[in-house]
Length: 122
Picture 1 (cartoon, rainbow, N blue to C red):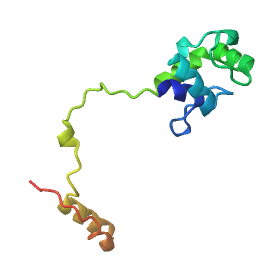
Picture 2 (cartoon, rainbow, N blue to C red):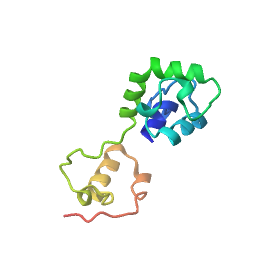
Picture 3 (tube, rainbow, N blue to C red):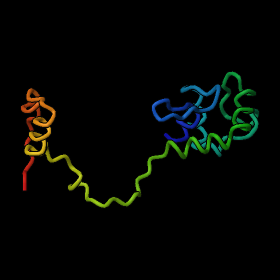
Picture 4 (cartoon, rainbow, N blue to C red):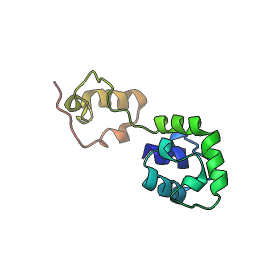
């Protein structure tokens, strides 16, 4: 998926992608070559024959480093050490006393009964 997003872009994450690569073209390339760096440099070497092959080859060549950066940005990092366990991070509900005090402070009594799930208070 990161290679795909490197080519097509991902507006939600601010990844621009490479000009000329849409969903269909990126899928064709990655189906045959799996990763960006496995795509041959010249279009006559490609197994796929997309429209605008010369322009796509030039884009890949000119913006290869950009594409590799975009792939890195689209890669989910899952080895970050966390100071808490997943169980500790699990939503425990709204701390009622603190929430009630906040409602009083802001004079928003209509919100006081909105949260329904209760947290086990120590």
